[in-house]
Image (cartoon, rainbow, N blue to C red; front, side, top):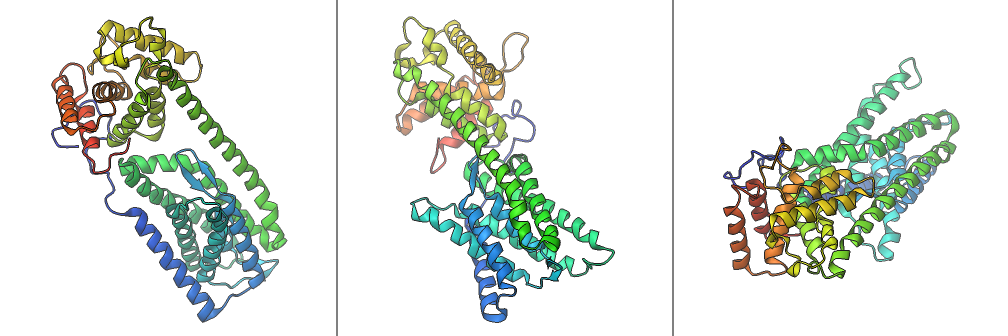
Amino acid sequence: MTDSVSTARVPQGVRGGQWRTVGPTRPLLIGAALLVATGSLLWTTAATGFEHPRVALAFGILVSLGEFARITLPGHREVAPIASASAMAYAFLFTIGNDPVTHSAWQVIAVVAVGLALGELPHIMVGRVPRWGDLARRLLNVSAVVLVFKSLAAAVDQDGPLWWLSLVLMAVVVVAAWALDSVAAAAVRADRLRTRFRVAVLDEMRAQLAIGMAIGASAILMALSAHVMGLTALLVFTAPLLVTQVAFRRYAEIRLTYLQTVRALSRVTEVGGYVETGHSRRVSGLSQAIGCELGMPESDLLELEYAALMHDIGQLSLRDPIPSGATVLASPREQRRIAELGSAIIRETGVLDSVAELVRRQCEPAAGCGDDGPPPLGSRIIKVTNAFDDLVGESKDRDRTEAVLQRLRMDTDREYDHAVVEALAAVLNRPAARW
């Protein structure tokens, strides 16, 4: 956004551009992972050879199976809990059945790299495009864990009275690895969505806290239990993590089904001829792009997506449809009626009250009306994007777009939020706008 953008109504922490990431974050991660993987493989195979090959094979197979069974969480986050936990357990390993394990940090990286590659092959063979950035993050995360742990654990006597220091060290390394991985994931996310880096970091930490702690705890238990149980500990402590992974997968599927249901419901107005085809989808995509531009957190972006998809559902109550469904051309009274009816329909679900509120207040002026104060930021965004799409539609004519932007700017003192309109202009001016 430009310096002229008003920030009076933008939430604290989302103004300015100082939190944006700049640069090819994803290519840098992939390049670093390739360098680390190649170097570790060359060093292990050519210089030292594999120590304890049976142990390396067991962990390599488990990493490979875990990568094959990876899951995708809400927010398009790809995680491989079993692979990550097995890799960290191999990094923390210091004994197997009372026999000391002396493999190097570079051997751990090499085994994990091969395991991840083998686990990715079946996905490639069936035509799935690999998400190289997430794969690189997983390898770099394990690399950081093993290099730090091996260097610090050398000073600790695991069999002596200070054995508990190893446990504390593992816990500290797990927390640090989770934090670093969240930062790396946030850098990729902020670069992809064009949102604030600080907001992306907080979103990633919240999203990965539960699964990250489950992975870390499982890795520590595997490494410590192997001291007594040997390689059997891998099977024993992989089972609870597998159950956790299934639960997360079900949660992700429920969230996806929920979104698909909302998208299907939003098309009712299009099928019924109340609005133009694609209107809800365009308003939703553009609203999310503006929300990212203004630094909205992920939870608010999800509510904004739902509200933008269903913002016109109140038109189903109209006896005579508005021409082209352009509510911006309707009277203020009619706009309020449509918004209130749409809000009432959404409230019937019993779980989308906050979304219903965004829909109810979408027609209010930016300063608000009555004693309720200014409408939520999501409502102000929908008001702008709905008006823009009503007047522009699917047209790609640049002159028409500029004319509509100027019209919206002229009404920023009454109807539209100036910061939202300028964010809209910033989104439309991107070389490859995606909404």
